[in-house]
Amino acid sequence: MELWKFFDITHLEHVVCNPMSVEKFEEVIALLRLEPEDRVLEIATGKGEFIIRLAEQYDIEGIGVDISPYCVSDAKKKHQQRIPDARLSFVEMDGADYEPQARESFNVVACIGASWIYGGHRGTLKALNEMAAPGGWVIVGEPYWQREPTAEYLEAIGQKRNAYGTHYENMKVGQEFDLKLVYTLVSNQDDWDRYEGLQWYAADEWASKNPDDSDVEEVLKRVREDRENYLRWGRETFGWAVYLFKKEVIKR
Image (cartoon, rainbow, N blue to C red; front, side, top):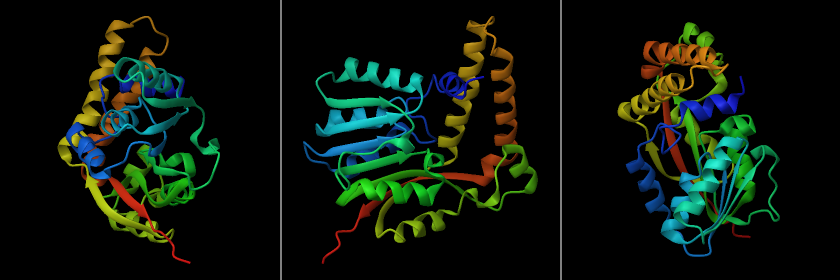
């Protein structure tokens, strides 16, 4: 079945499509202390919750990019329902293909939970850094290993050990691009359980309301496998954090 249909089904109940509470989400927004007219780019904007809340609080100008037609449709609806006069636009495309009109032109560049777009954490920081203005924010959400994953777990989720680093290693990568880490917000067990559990719930609800959909069996099978992997290994092995980097102003 189509990947983005599966993502849409399993995230129907989520306000934030990452393992982070709304309270922590608001904490990130409050720490940015943006000015009206600041420009924001969010790659993998999802349902647009982050950039819409930034517009509600700071009156920013923003662009949200996502490859999922379901997410872009949801984001546009939220925009019109909540803050129709905000200077926001949502673009349906692969974030890796997005090219700004000018380099280093955004006060905030974010990619929260989708580093696969740029081939991993290092590639994501490199790409975002090139679009952020000096002194601007580079914000990423990235998994990390809380402890060494077992070979059995890696095989079950189809990942290699070097796909992710540790929490410390995620910070160190930023230094390669003169990015200064000023804050991290780490997901706890409740955040993870809510994020994973709402996917099981949403899939079950969707299946009960759409019994004749041709993808029902595949959706439920994938959710069962994901639940097994999370409860058996992932809950104690996989971490996630939001990293707030500042782009250094290079004095010449």
